[in-house]
Amino acid sequence: MSISPLPHRQIRAQYTPSTITVYQAYPPSIATAAVQSQTLNNIPGFKTTRMTWIKPSFLWMGYRSGFATKTNQECVLAIEISREGFEWALQHSVLSHISSMGGDDEKEKAIWKKKLRETPVRIQWDPERDLLFRPLGWRSIQIGLSGEAVEKYITRWIVSIRDVTGVMREAKELVDCGELARAAELVPRENVYEVDEEIRGIIGSS
Image 1: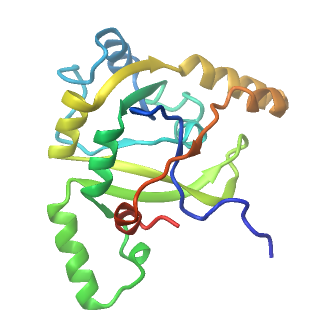
Image 2: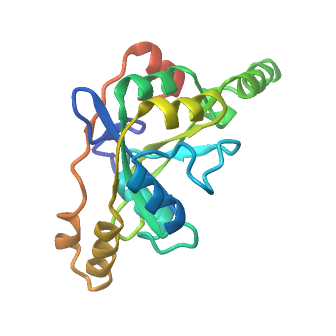
């Protein structure tokens, strides 16, 4: 049996002392306006009534968007948000699946369903991917924002927005040519993002 070199669930990201970078993919109409105005607030086509998912993993965003080739995901944005906002989201979250919480009896299900109704943030842990989109032995965090959380995200947390579509597509070209080592050089270095014990318990990290 192979042993994963990393903990099964651990936040890894690009970050500074005050910010953390997350990724989102949008159609050009939304992405261009967001980069120009450096906000997602009042951007035509961006719906605050829908859950919006942010992802700290560059490679998982590459997998999800097909390296910025899928319909309505043709542009990938690197969005710097405040660490304060990011950790608020984690503190006000619930896991998307009851099985991730370590139990599935009726009482636990009732508690979980109540949290789903009342909590503005969803946490999902999906297998991290390599450059060929093969699943790896550890998971990457996805954070779904709705209601109060998405409002805070677009009005308070965003510090900067960069278009990294070109990097995504260059990586795809190199992968398609079998130049995996060169493609790997384009992947940003993502380090362990430490959170306190309370947050680890909420998000189910290991």
